[in-house]
Each structure stands twice: as structure tokens, then as C-alpha cells.
Amino acid sequence: MRELKRRGLSSDKAAESQARTQIEAPPRAPPKDQTRSQLEVSRALNSEGLEGLIPRGKELLKLGLSFFLAFGPLILGIAALAGTLYFLFGDQFIHGGRTSMSMPRYVDPYELLGQPTVDPTVPLRPEQLNQ
Image (tube, rainbow, N blue to C red; front, side):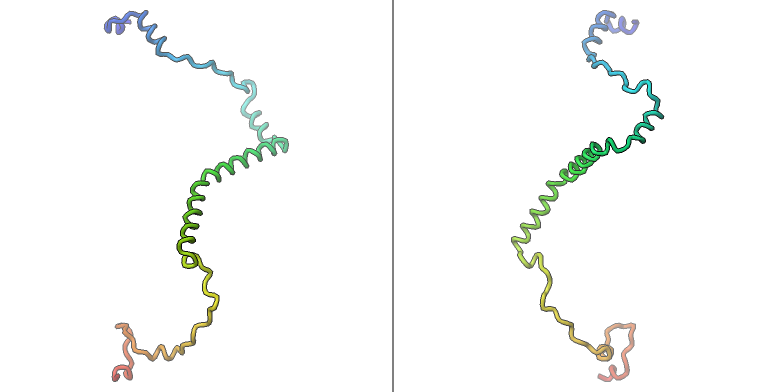
């Protein structure tokens, strides 16, 4: 009260302004299971059986499909990009490899060992030094 008087407000004006600024909330509904204990609720959920299987399955399918559809624009964008690149580059972009592959030619390993080396850690053979 003293604070209201100090600011020059009467209690009537304060109540009016407070009533104007307050928004009425809708009345709360009483909880559904006031009388049931948490143990009873948990037991009822755990022993539900097969009678709720079809509706739960439908809800899970809806959730899964909606999650997949959320990525639809991204999937379509990537598919359009790949299609455009294939249209522009053709077989150079996506190819199945060469159909006329043959075995590589045989190279004698001793012929490779006989070639001079440029590796500084491998010493040259005496016959390679004379060349």
C-alpha cells in the first residue's frame, strides 16, 4: 500500500490496471486418472495385449513415412543433380567399365630387379656402376 501511495496510485486504480492486463485462462480440466495410482497405470500399459496392436502399428507407419517424406526435397534434389550430370556428360559420368579387358602383360621380376635404381638407400650393383 505504501508503495502505491508513494507512486501516486490508489488501490482501486491498481486493481483496475491489473484486471485489464490479466488474460483469463481457460478453466483446467481435472486429471483423468486422479484415483488410479501410477502402479496401476503402468500395469495397464504393460498388459495391453494385442487389442491395441493395429492402431499402434498405423501410428508408427505414419511417423516413419512422415520422417521419410521430410527428406523428400533433399532426395529429389540429389536425384535431379545426378540426372542432369548424366544428361550432360553421358557415359563419361557413369560407366560400367571396359568390356574388353585383358590380362596385363607379364613382366619378369628379375628384369625389374636388374634395372638401375634412383633410391639413395639402395646401393647400385657393381655392373650398374660401369654403365
